[in-house]
Length: 435
Image (cartoon, rainbow, N blue to C red; front, top):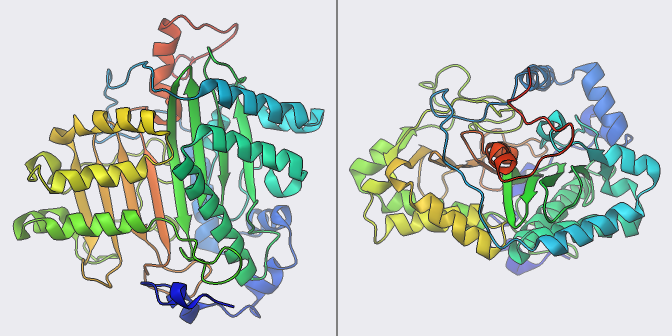
């Protein structure tokens, strides 16, 4: 029985006007397949053509050596440093070693990669399994699955962990809505390990699947959780045992509050396009999968020019505080000591932090926004339907992501610094030092 309070919430239950016809071939076929059959049919069959074309483009992008997202094509140096961020590394190492002790030799071989493996970069957020690495939580024993979740719990903040679990539960809810739980479910996520758990050496892991992708690099008590992607369609569970689960409401509310708080002159400068699919957009500014996002999966080297209004020109007492509150939401996966350090670093770059907006900013208007500086990029986007039938973007389908530009993703910018910090592994080759 649906919870009436949930249905009465803003946009709660609104998505039900756009439920798909489950009798069409897309869903009748999907309902008979497991995740591997579904992915194979997609890759080999090339349907739908636009999405298959995007997949082929992603494969091409993956062949490029890692450079990092930049504003002008030039990687800026000396932006990041080795520091104590208070990460509970002993607990993270312990829980990860417990997980490894539970894996079979075959599972261990599938899960473990060299820390410099290019497989770091093969995460993706659609429901089809394009990169099948590591172990998949819906294919292992409950004991192994719970051990993976313990690794997440020990690494993330309590509120960040709840956000991740919320995204997973919403994915399970979507699978139930379209009657395809073998493709979309609460545990249709992969875990892969890079390097070996250590309190002194660099290592990390990737946890990825539909609408939730976390790449986590660890060195001593420091962490880089970047890039990450979090989405939901719909963004609210309105019935069942997880009824009331909702994510990304604060990112939406705070972004709209910031845009509305600007002066008319600043709003005009921030609003780079009036329409979410504006005829003024240059070719490539919008695509079927990422829509307005610029920094999604496989976009590790994208050039993203600054747009919009400079944050340092906003009145500090109000708008700049809203910027900090937005950034704090995007840093929620980090435990609070590390989050506070990172937030202060971002504040110091307000003189080169830009806020831009696409779409309207009325109560019902879907929208896109981005905050971008030399040390962070965050994006928020309301999307049209993928499983649901809404052809126009709606507030019940949300995509968010965070990138660390200038080679910061995957801890790449830290790796030469770690080497100079005294860590050397036999045979280790840092990204960028290859022939």
